[in-house]
Length: 160
Ligand code: MG
Image (cartoon, rainbow, N blue to C red):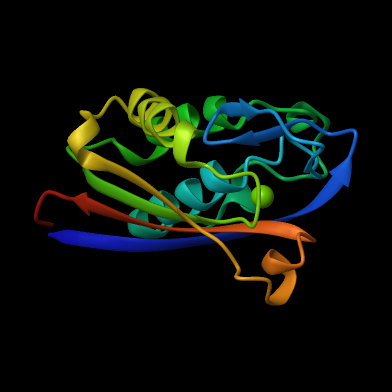
């Protein structure tokens, strides 16, 4: 059986925070605010994987009220998610994601983001894709109030 899951996340921009997206720390005047490293892309991918596996959402597994996850490296959370999902013959077939961010431009960083996500999920690069788009000056993305990401994950599961 093939199952799919969607993921969506948003984080607000704030001064004095590192900008971490897809496990890459990107030079920027401001970063994203969050309990963990606020890696909006990785959080969307985690939710997509949990969705495809029927395992709830990121907040249930890594609650932002838990001191364990303060400043957490979200790539580590993604590794833990793989261990939750890829069990009992379940295989991660593909992950695709889009980051919505006005600036900075993510083009130079996308290959490393893809490598980081594929590495954490123990997948070949061909099974992971990362895209980025701007808000064209509209909405919270366009006004640089925050960044968002959406993701879709596909799992191949043994017949039950
Ligand atoms: Mg988040």
